[in-house]
Image 1 (cartoon, rainbow, N blue to C red):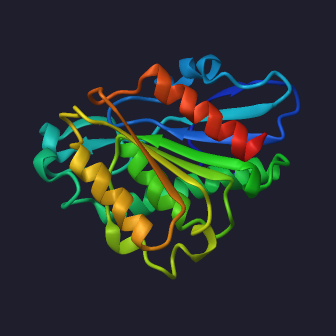
Image 2 (tube, one colour):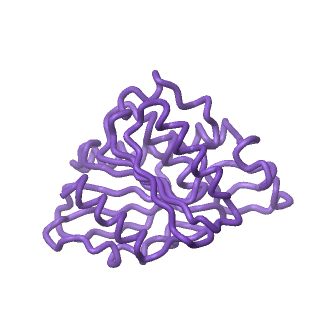
Length: 224
């Protein structure tokens, strides 16, 4: 086990899981944030999945006056959330994700049986770490998010996961990450040839039950 392995909340939907979902929380939250949605996904009882909700490292966040919170990378200005990303921080979080995937591989779950999901800042990492992973994933889920560093996503860097199904969803009334940023991210990866499906909901910066049910359907499709 890597010494860089982040602490996680783990939930198994059955004994001897044959698949995993690694789910990355948003800025200032932690791994407990999305753990309660597992029963709401409507997964079949015979599908044993290990859900992994890692806690991001703590760091000072510039746009929050240097307040220390859990984050996947620093944000300089909220109003320029997608433009002044901490690229070194994004790359560090990609390595954390790779360690988490390698840990599941060591526990007998192959990469093509792993879905990487994330919300908001976690979704920004799900886009970037998922599409640039060196082995094909089962799927990628990006919720209420944006691309933190477009330059990391190129035809070459995403070649292995270009055909991996990617589900992107966004609230049309999102005041934190405007829907235009979500559309921009979705269009950018679609233009690279990524197999992306897009869904919007009349909500703010959150998830809703129909969205959770859609994610459950996606998980069943890719891992069932």
